[in-house]
Structures are given as C-alpha cells and as structure tokens.
Length: 143
Image (cartoon, rainbow, N blue to C red; front, side, top):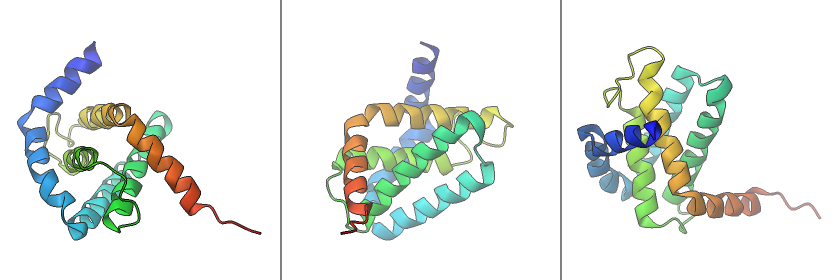
C-alpha cells in the first residue's frame, strides 16, 4: 500500500507531468533519445547502484536498450504509448529535482527506483517481447 501511494504521488507530481510533457517530443527525435540514453548512463555510473540496487540498474539498462533499438530503427514493435512512458520515466530519472530531490543522500533516489519498478511491472508484456527479440537478434548463429 505504501509503495502504491508513493507511485501515485510521483505520477501526479508536477515533476512527472513535466517529464511526460517532454516525452512525446523526445520520442519523435532519435537524436534526443540517444542524448537521453547517454544522460541516463551517466547518472547510473555516477550513483553506482550496487547490492540490492543492481537489479534496478539492470532494469534501467534494459529500458535504455529498448529506447536505443527503437531510435536506431532496429526495433519498431514497441507501442507508442509504451515508448512515451519509458521516455517519461527516464527523463524523470535524470532530473535532479523531482519529488524527492536526488541531492538528498540515500533517500534521493527512492522515487526514481519506485518509478522504474512500477514501469517494469506495467510494461511487462512489451518488455518480454523486446527481451525475446533481443535474444534472437543478438545471438550469433554458429553453423
């Protein structure tokens, strides 16, 4: 219940609404998508998610691969609504000022983590399809 109330506070916050407003413009522009991916990678490296948060880092990296594959034209099966949701969450993630500002030690990333976990659960089917596509596409066939 506590997690749900945090998610609903995040989704209703001016910070997430702002990210959602930008997401459509980003999603239509491959260059912006690649720049966003670079910013997200930078934040992942700066914060250095370890231990229990390594799964979170893996989830963000999967979202980045989805965005990059879409932006490069390799993967077009991602529904528009899902792409915009992913981009909105990534914009929120890189923003230092959000519901719980990132400059607050330890708790500053709590909202970012909760939002990414929520997105992964929400887009489960789209993520599974991408992961299946990625396995087939990225597998080197010897023989």
